[in-house]
Image (cartoon, rainbow, N blue to C red; front, side):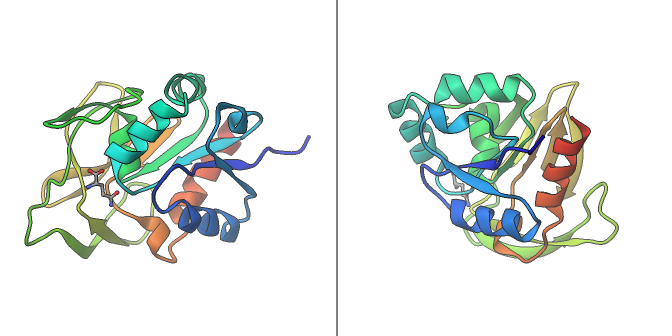
Length: 192
Ligand code: GLN
């Protein structure tokens, strides 16, 4: 049986970069904008961008409930940066519309003005060498539920988590040529 494409939420943000990384990692992809685009996808990526815009457009396009349903149904999902925020159950201060499927609370733009954007090596559970992480007005995770595993921290802040088939990070692997996060998503898909 053929495996369906990986859906990439393409409402706003750097979805093309995610498609490129996924294709480099050997997957086929599909841009997702409407509920019917979710049909027969085998995994999902929610890109970085602006979570307020992604949340508002998702509401406008009637995508909140369909996305929630497929992710709660166990669709392997990777969120980066704004994607992490959109997956969360809550955001401290100015929460945009959220999917509330990942049991974490996030703080948006958590790394301060002078440190708005930076690159730094981080250790990630399951990877045998550090990842050169790109943080762009990145969120941090301030609270996690009991089913959430911490995969990476930076400066004592939680920056990557996993809960069952959901992977979410505060940084942007899609802006690097490190394919290991997209490969991680594809291996979650294989486990299913
Ligand atoms: N600061 C953005 C937000 O709050 C996230 C930035 C990003 O995705 N690079 O949505």
